[in-house]
Amino acid sequence: MVFVNEKTYQTYLEEGREEEFHKEYEKALEKVNLGNEYPILVGKDEVKLSDKLIVKTPIDTSKVLGIFQRDDGSNLLNAINVAKEGFKYWKDSDWRDRVELAYKAVKEMRRMKFELAVIITYENGKNRYEAMAEVDEAIDYFNYYAKLLEDNRGFIREMESRIVKGEKAYSVMRPYGTWLIISPFNFPLAITTTMTLGALLTGNTVVVKPSSDTPLSAFMLVSILRKVGFPKEVVNYVTIPGELVDKYLDYVDGFAFTGSREVGHKLLKSFINKKPRPAVLELGGKNATIITAKADLNKAVEGTFRGAFGFGGQKCSATSRVFIEKAVYNEFLAKLKDKIEKTVIGDPRKRETFLGPLINKNAVEKYKKYIKQAIDEGGKILVGGNVIEEEKTYLVQPTVIVDLPYSSSLWKTELFVPILLAKEVENLQEAIKLANDVDYGLTAGIFSEDEKEIEYFFNNIEAGVVYANRISGSTTGGMPGVQPFGGWKDSGWTGKNAGGPYYLLSFMREQARTTYK
Image 1: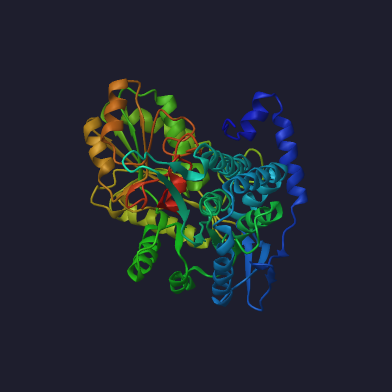
Image 2: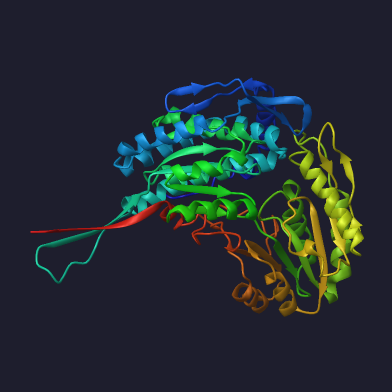
């Protein structure tokens, strides 16, 4: 099989069927029901509790997205035990069977793709284009990881054996056991998919714990996996507040987490303090874009705008710093300001909307806090800086801050809201020095038409995913099988990026098997 990325909207455009895309999305808007109740899934049991988690959509906080169960830990522990029982047989399942199940899941996700995109829009406020791109990304993970297993023959390799007569040696990658999957709100389907599949396809069993803001996409994923034939004991789903999870890490064999550095480090230290065990972590970024004097400014403005303000900057890969060479500083910012002022902000269900709501009230409070801090410390707002609505929905303006002293902590803090800090630099060398001057190392971008500048950037920037002249998002939008996604320094842990050729190895350990005649 040849791997090809799933690019739904682009395909509709190329085939002259854009209006059909919008009709399908709007049909799904009418089809998706809000307010249903969803159980915890533990093995064959569907569990409902007296304590409920009422999740409202950030699009309209008067509307209930769904009613979920608020576990106190007892069901999580039960799910872990069930998954451990499932591991006893799943670890020895044929990798070819797992691949076949993955391809079955692809067919089901394609059938449901517009419904899944609408659910994402309601869950976290993504516009229709970004929501569909997330569904595409999830499908890509299924296809790409299944192909990896095929290409590597289940990661079973015959070794050289030339010294001892009758010796037969193999390297076999084996699963660890039961994994806890802790997923974030910003990519509730795609990131949950990559972590869950990474474990499942390599013979591990899982308990999926979604973000309390966005539990529905994860429920849909687990339901699809079970529907196509993944055993129920093998893939479980528990909704539990994040602050209760820590003490249950003692009972699992590995965990995968995407979220803030602070939470990730706390969980990791607790986890490996007990005994050495694997963890897969993606812990955010403070991503920089560099604009040199040799940049095409039209490309630079579009790419920086999309990188900084796509999904309101609520991406670990979002552009949060831009360093601009002195010769083009004023012109670039003038063009960027003009672009931002034309941003359509509002209901993400509408086709013209670029920026929908932030995820919750707390995000709006962070936005206001950071704006105030920037002003108090001497920064100036070039554009934006205002809250549009914070009760019925959570709308804020994309914001660019200039003249902020470099001593401000905002230069090194992951903000996760649509705020971009801009700074003038003398040359590319200074820009790269500043770009690297953070604990994070996730993504970075450059705009330059000079190949030598681009080469220098690639060779000296400290980040796991780097782009040159990326118009669709200067630091964002890595695609499975094309741009493996993961960070250096405090942004990651394993060094094996999601959607890349080595990711599955994070969920396995090597066993050397030798027999003699």
